[in-house]
Image 1 (cartoon, rainbow, N blue to C red):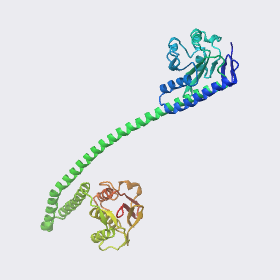
Image 2 (image 1 turned 135 degrees about the vertical axis):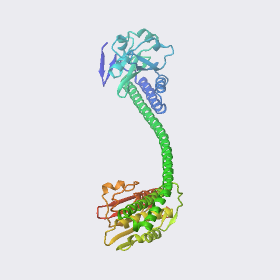
Image 3 (image 1 turned 90 degrees about the vertical axis):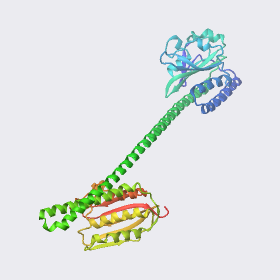
Image 4 (image 1 turned 180 degrees about the horizontal axis):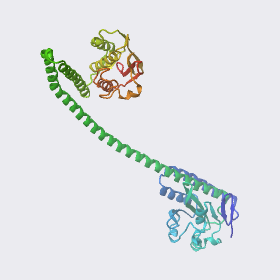
Amino acid sequence: MAAARAGGRAVTDPQPSHGHEAELQRLNRLYAALTQINQTIVRLPSRDELFAAICRIFVEQAGFRMAWIGWHDPATGRLLPVAACGDEDRYLTGIAVYGDDRPEGRGPTGRAFREGLPQICNDLSRNPDIAPWRPQLVRRGFEASAALPIRLGGAVAGTLSVYAGETGFFQDREIALLQEAATDTSFALDNMIRAAEHAAALDAVRRMNADLEQRVGERTAQLEAANKELESFSYSVSHDLRAPLRAINGFAGIVLEDYGVSLPEAARAHLERIRRGGQRMGALIDDLLILARLNRTTLRPQPVDMSELARESLDELEGQWAGREVEIRLDPLPPAQGDPGLLKQVWVNLLSNAVKYTRGRTPALIEVSAQADGDRLIYQIKDNGTGFDMKYAHKLFGVFQRLHRDDQFEGTGVGLAIVQRIVHRHGGQIWAEAAVDRGARFCFTVHGRGG
């Protein structure tokens, strides 16, 4: 008999419906089965468990003689049974169903896979496409069957087949409910794939994070060891250099003092250069020792009167601007929480720079102020000195990085590195803003008292 298509599906051998009461009973059982399948979809996370449960529900709840799910094997072209219920005599192990157009693929199951539409046979005994399996089907009392495609990622991957014990069982409403079950199953499979991919991705991220944490820990330990070794080396070298340097400076001074008048002018000039170089190297060694000690020094945080520290620092630096016209504007500064000895070093270094780089300005103007920013305090030292080009600002806080020549402004190139390390140890930040010949502004942050 010819197959007819109606309502988006292929229907084979349509038969008149049974009585109204019998149809209601069938529909009630299918509705109950569909409800139970939806609950099962939410509860079962694995494909095989879900397939087995669906087949069982269709047999036990909906009253079908048998239900099975076939999954396409690309290597053989077969639809292999992966779940079944009502197959106690192992019918499915004795047959072969294919997804292509060979005789074993022309029944409802093969066509449902191939065409992607529900396939209905309401009288198995009279359908010539059932010929390869008719004797076994009739012997088991299977009178009608329905096969529906199951999709994975939008493509047909398998089929759901159910068998009824009466002809004409599958009418429009029964078919619609079966198709809804197949669609829900397809959605469930897609969700399982997405969940598995998501879980795999999370697992991969966890492994990557664990590996990264381990590597970061190892590299951090290596870096800490290298830093300690470098600090120890810097401390030892700087300390050991002081003795011979002290001898060089001392004896150069003695020669100049005791024999300077009898020396040729060129010899005196050379000795003066030796002495100045020795003094500069002494200052550099002192700064390197301070820098090396910073990470060894234990912080002793306490409330710190920042106004008092700034005034003390200015008093110590007063000799540097003797004979110059310098205006200092010191606003009241809020107290901070920190190590007073280290914070004093910050003020001395930053104010000393302001005094040095305003040389040649009349009057030189240095302004010290502060402002609150949430739970931190921002202290600033602003001057009207020579300033610098902001494209070199990234070099400011590096060791031995200087933006001016020695013959312009003296310095070791370590002072701002010391300041930055102290500020960082207090959990703060430091930055600078400037323009050439328009002054500079240095800002650093620390926590307020009790912060």
